[in-house]
Image (cartoon, rainbow, N blue to C red; front, side):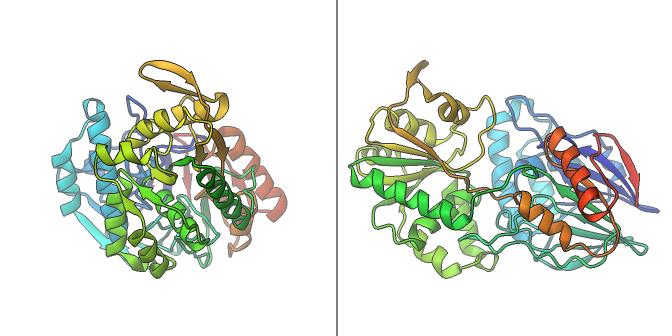
Length: 419
């Protein structure tokens, strides 16, 4: 197999790999950078691709997939959950950035019609040339890694992976078999997360503190996975006060109700969502910001959605709180809030009076877990460190070689390797 790194090498975002066999070519993910003017991985002629294997729904892995459905002939292969979640996120992508995108809603319909839906850990034939298995990745609902085999050679592509159980999801399946190559994310290869028990305990303590002093706690959270995780954490730790949820997260809840087999504890999820107040309009939002409670609302970086309104209102009162529970891209409103304590309201920059706390509810493996992943590898593979900034990828590759003796590299975009 020849593997070309089209995107996601020495960078976080727009992940994409081109894999060529003897006769057919396939893609593993094809994401996008989702700024105001989105960018995509290196171009590939759609007519040259037989199939696209998608690890999960996040746009940095799925955002460019519709480009290959401007014509018939390509097949998307992913889990049923990932398909539904991808369609929701891609529709929102078109709504926000449609002027700059080379595809539209009609292309999503073609994509959906040409998708082969598989279950987590299912093994399937690809293009009559490859065999692929899709182990659980533990990252978001429906997310998988990919073990790709061709003529006796085997590649693991982790996509985004999380080894630890959360309230919402079971940690990644690490039974990959003997491997000839490992293409692993390196996002937090130089950083360890705090123990999940401590993060959850500290977060719920802060939520209780804010509400019991008469304040409102805003939790800007990604709509896929993070919003549901936060609600489940509050339920699992016996939070007694009102919890409301707003925005696209509510649509994601509907998908997860239909696919409860993708969750670690479906009973916890059901009970949590049955007791969450569903926000359905502006009248309700205006009342909520005055009632001691927790409000969970996308967007996770405060760049859009109902969380923008909540942030403007809640930030003005010192008895209120804002919990940052997701990574904040430099330059985003959430990063400005976190680093400088500022919010833009009605075109003016204001100092935030609410108490701001950060809690590291990451869906990615930290440094310790990434080394644990490599420890589970069988065989003597070449390891390629991707999905991290340049220094992280380079250092991680060097450390893998020093610790395990594997040949390890940090490829650049456009690099080609043979497995």
